[in-house]
Image (cartoon, rainbow, N blue to C red; front, top):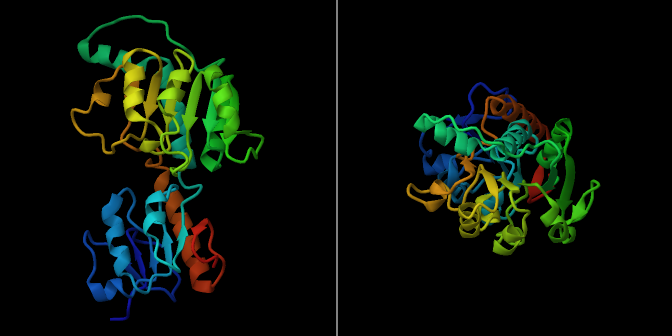
Length: 302
């Protein structure tokens, strides 16, 4: 058997004839096969288990992550290996969920759903997304798409990033403007600088009745501070990510009022498969022909 060099969970891909694919069959291949893999696409949403075999891939040249965020891979990236992310693949799905959570949290869906389960018809006036001032922390491809789509909702959008490019404010402006924001949407990478960006001080500084939407990573928000703010009715929230994650049964965040929690499904919709397959096929063609890869995050600039 000739040595496979591509390991990917997707079948039926248009793979260049010069490459050979080893399909994932629910378990890791034998060590000698692992040692021959040169291009690895970790299974989507498989967590740490999908990364365990990387240390045994002695011939590995490229990791093409199906995720936009690759903080977990950066921690274990072997020297000399190129890491690419899936920039653009998740934009449509994640942006629509971010806006959906913002509308749901502003309009009180958590309360209305709880009343529905109880069979209670209780009319309440809630805050609209319309006429809100929305801060988007992180103005990459997803954050930029959220901003463009929000233009249809009669809101004022302010973007924040470290450099202040793309007509955004810098993070130095964030604390000054935070008390004026009706909605804060987090869509930035998890780094040591962004860990607990929304700490107790910043959550307390949010406008009373404002809404916090976390589409980034759970640890960007201090969970204890968030739960306390929710319990005292200071803010509402929509969370696609949590800390810890998965959120354990019985965790007090489950019982907090005025929060809607989705189980990290932002990018995982019917829009994911066609987009990620297109990206992988394009990257494999580039790899096979020696062309520069797209979406390089770390490692050699091939």
